[in-house]
Length: 112
Length: 113
Image (cartoon, rainbow over all chains, first blue to last red; front, top):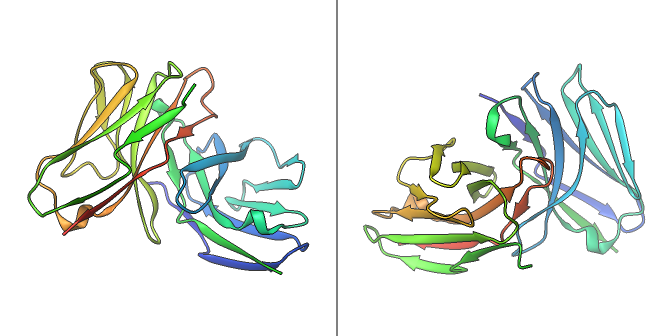
């Protein structure tokens, strides 16, 4: 089946850029997503990218997609302490019901 | 507009007990999902529903049953709880016309002893 992988932990200093990486195996993925989960809360959709795009920018967030290598990244510019959370990558294939396959999540720690 | 709500927020069960988790959404969404979240494993899909009266199995359905008798509610049942079902359970919903906006509930933390 589909597989989505992420590194488990990333630590950055406040004000630096964070880059969270994700790899996936499903070559038929139509959309790829980044979700944020703060402690004790559900998942919040941050951004998504269509599979025929290379890049998408949304304020401090930049998503890069390398479809050939099945690699997705999320860059957060000027990282703030409020960005500390778990970030999940997810992909949607061509099947019905819009089912998503999630990565393991990357815990981002922002230090002062 | 409350979005997606889940009841209860926390529960402790003994092995063999049963319970039902309730997910409710007030956004008139067709599709609803139940996931479980375990450390280091991300979210895994348990069951899902594409409309009232329909349900289907996800990636990890064993030990769970679901029902979607009303469009706004999606129930997840554990008939005989096991320690392996200790997890955080999330419900989500989407409208098929806006499939890129999946709304999540706040989660139910279940411990089975």
